[in-house]
Image (cartoon, rainbow, N blue to C red):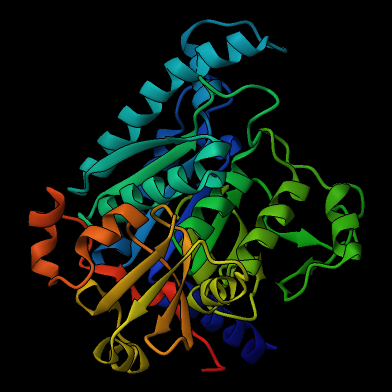
Length: 385
């Protein structure tokens, strides 16, 4: 029995320590001191130290944080109970300032800078806004900054919103090709029945497939506080698994919750069958109708076969009308389709820079874009060539 527990603890620690990019989501029940409606600073300080430790080891971290509306209600002296949409939005506007300042102060104690990013569903569904948001987050992480994300409640409507940060966090994890999403909440995992009603309920420690039976169990389980329940966490896990990202539901009730997970505390892991990169490439390969076509020379073909990116100098012809981020096919001069990829430039821009060296792109376009027309992570070689 001890060996089994030890093995499980080691496996939990390995999954977190090996993840190069982690998204951590904090539920309102952890963030807010219920007695005062203010930030639970002691708990947040312990989490801040854990995030700083991850970043010090070279791991990239994004934080998705609930709590703005609850903080804003207390700050604006709103009475408890239901509020109109405009009152929710007013509370969010006030609470976001408090939340951002709190994270800036707590992470600043570890010499880590913080940036606030507010997203709406359109930012993860509209292709151009998706790419802009992804680029912003990539840039922030590259600068060693901790992005703190919340839904932009001040501009969303009741009909067009996530409604919970579990699914928002999953979309962010998918967007940035994260290795792991950690959902910290007031529950320690998924059980085979509702543990608040059934004392014999058993924790499900690993899930490799989300079945209708699991969904039925999750639909009956609720968290004690906030807009999300277990059903939203399962929906988030499904998004992550399809993107090749592992998801973890764990309790954040105690200080240093990530250390507790690595020490073997109760939690539920949702394990994908493929890596984020493999999932992304599978999605790209499945795009049957590319928006355009690039005809490349022999040197570019050889570079792609060796696992390289597609550079502008190797492109001879640009066909079709497309925008940045669209899927295009890559063919040889004799008409063989050899790859699909997501292009970093529009068709108009690609026409201007085709055949030129990467260092000439800025001169041709008037600004410095990416060196690659299609980065190797966004390119899939076709099997039938």
